[in-house]
Image (cartoon, rainbow, N blue to C red; front, side, top):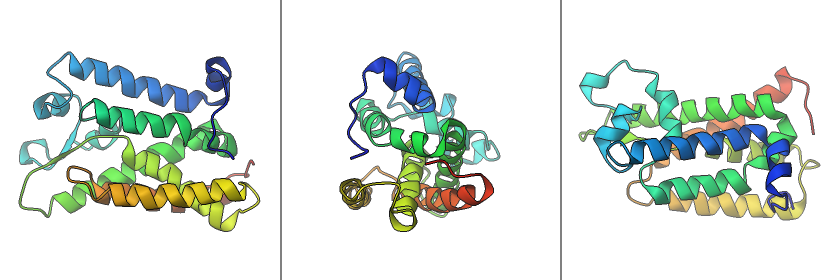
Length: 204
């Protein structure tokens, strides 16, 4: 069962350096925003790089990246941090750290691009923050593995993954949660993983 974490903190840091770094960045940015306006304050979130379809921020494409490290409230941070801490690390071991980093960041970018494109068509202005698109990118990579590389993960882990995906999609219909960004990250991770194992030598 690859989704059970048994490492102590030192072995966790050695085994999953990129995942650990992502967790630290998310927490540090949350603390900074909390002390500079509040993590639920749209003005503060926009200051530090939230995505928005407000006309005055049009063209600031760097927000598609920075928004991945911001969270709207402690519960948002807690949910994504738990996913990063528990469910994402095995993918770093399967892919290798630098390839995992590429997949994570590109999945997050794709999720944010798709989310912004969708909300730009809506009558209300909105803003997007969170690591969810990138995390769902990791789930998308796992889905590819579960379907086409069945030797890589065991049956129990495969069943756990399918349960996570069903619950995650259902949760994405909660008000205030971006279903579009989640699905965009999921599809992005699925296809990016399939592409990357063809471009780079696979490591399992």
